[in-house]
Image (tube, rainbow, N blue to C red; front, side, top):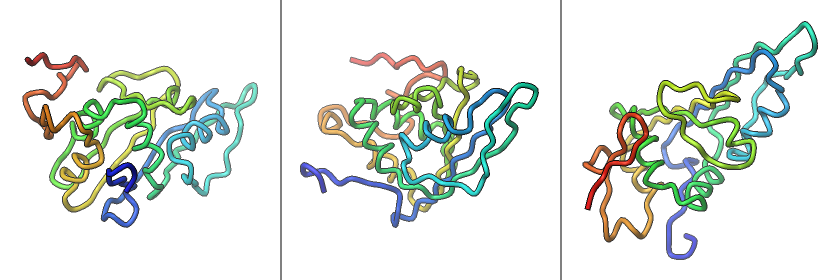
Length: 171
């Protein structure tokens, strides 16, 4: 508990975390891994990354299983994007699983950015899959902030952002 608030990490909370990304073309394996580790410092895989060089680009699918989400969730709080995170992380929620994407370019500087669905942002994406019993409640708890005592938010409520990323207007 930090400052009277429970801090979740996904570890030991019944949540399975899978992060996947494709490193291809001129993508620097080292830079992609560094970007991921800005948000998930303990993420590691068994891949033997190869840096691209003239005439031979990268071409690897990477997967990272069950890293702690502590740094990622902390970044959501620091950036004050908890309602956006609630919407983005739950957009594809189906029973007890969901998936969402994070911009690798934003992650390279320790920031969280959720690309608009269907967009292919410069620098690529990390695809995050979460699974676990009670996942909807876990996402709501992980993205909770004191403002929700004044303006309550839940998954898929009337304040959920539009499909194009625009905020819903409410008064």
